[in-house]
Amino acid sequence: MSLVSGLRSIANSLGIIQVVKAGNGDSAPAKLPTRSVTLSELMSEVRQADVQALAQAPAELTVSLTKVCETAGVKPPAHGWTVDRLRELLRSQKFSSLAREAAQRALLEHFASEKVTVEDVVKDGIARDQAIDAFEKFVYGKMESRKSARQRQIASLQSQIESLQSEAATEAAQWKQWLDQKRAYEKEMAWAIGYLLDRPVITTEA
Image 1: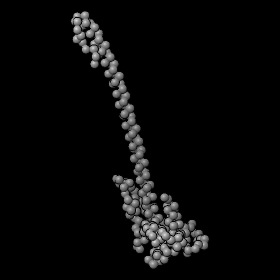
Image 2: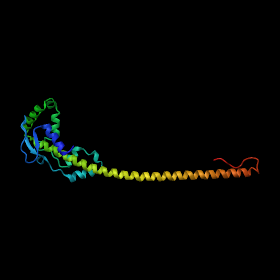
Image 3: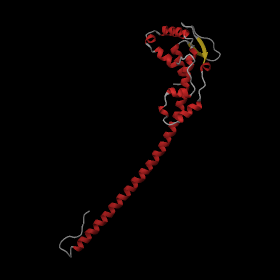
Image 4: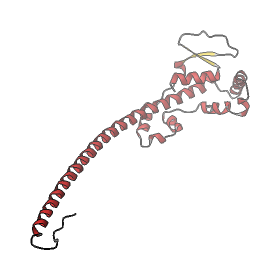
């Protein structure tokens, strides 16, 4: 998921803030109070070098998303409300049974009681999205390098296989030619000795 797509998904789920272009403070009327923010206000700094180092480590595909976010420097807000905690709350029995607008109002009341700002939760979600997107980019590059190396190795092995098959075919043909010469010679010897003995003493079969 791209950063903007992730932001829009989170923002739309909440329906409490509206993302606008910088300098545009106008917003359409809404049933719930909304506040306009710019994308730059919600962006966080991700430790790209640390994420890249994590991606370069062995068994990178077994690294948990939580580990990726931690390595990127994503820390939960002081109040402890992360996008994961929000997701769990929205899927709880209390909220999942509510209509969208009722759930939004309940969220606002819940956040107000715990002194949680919507922006903090959205920033957490965007930061996590940035972190895993960066990790994906680095791991993809690593996998592409491995893929190219494997293709070169396969081509080399295929060439070796073809060379061995050619050697085997040549040897088989030479073996057949030698056997034909051997048997022909044995038959000639048996024919000649047949004039001296009344019983065969020369082998003529393999």
